[in-house]
Length: 335
Ligand code: ATP
Ligand code: LTN
View 1 (spheres, rainbow, N blue to C red):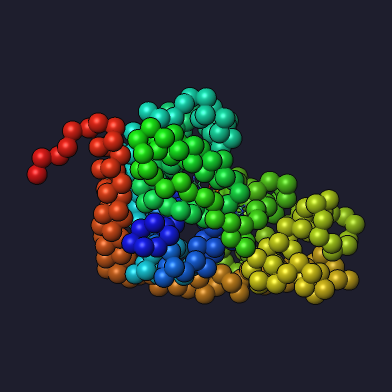
View 2 (view 1 turned 90 degrees about the vertical axis):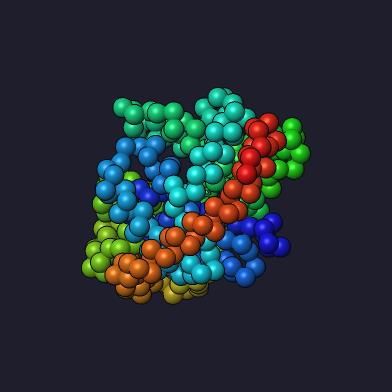
């Protein structure tokens, strides 16, 4: 709880360009949360980004684009606290403390670490290994009650809870124990080229993912090339992952139910399904893309958002950090 409201924290890494999966699985859910009801913090997780090697200029640009995308998608920065993780030093400071309350064995079990270590075998750094501890710090600093993330982040949230409970059991109630917030659109969106895999911004096949800033023609083309199956029947079934994914995307974008979608598409061919889904996605993304372009031009406004929100985030984060520092025995600051 913060200021009498339940608190909520989420964030994304500033790596790659956001996909439709990120949008439907995370961002669109965030936009549906009412900042009058919850105290909402959304980070651009740039400390996490450098766990894999980044080009500095590119990282800076992507981080700014991500911030503009948050706003373009509908997060009002006057009502939600949108900030760069690297602007609030409490994240790194609390992560250090929490590292000392986390076991090697716990980190060894993290599937995202195993995946990323396999993909970046030439750079398995300790930051990548302790990534979930930094994520725990992100969440616990804001006393978050809820963390709206997709399915793939559940394991990280479990470890956050374990670390928080361990700390609290030694030192008393320092941290709120967070829960995953499952939005209506929580399901995983799959790759258009291999519908058994999640759609991911780091996929090497450009046809696998719809990017939020893809031009309408590119979106249409990628959907036309989407992998389906050969039996020609539109049905919602685990045995037809390609068609199921297209229906999931359609439902998430339009807000209709699977039954409604099946009624609409019953008896039609795969080609029609693909173009209808593509049109629905274009209709959803075009206004967002326009807002994004306008925001990019408005440098002063974005700079003010960055400054004010970093100050606000620091205020809350430092409060929790000081509490944790005192509990572990660091000397009080002399003013
Ligand atoms: P990377 O490929 O770099 O690991 P990613 O595309 O998997 O990135 P993340 O930055 O790990 O994206 O995730 C940002 C948010 O988007 C998280 O809350 C995650 O759960 C959600 N998300 C990512 N991919 C999908 C997907 N395919 N479907 C639904 N939600 C997703
Ligand atoms: N690990 C997350 C990004 C992330 C995050 C967080 C999400 C970093 N810190 C805190 C929610 C809360 C990811 O890869 N999507």
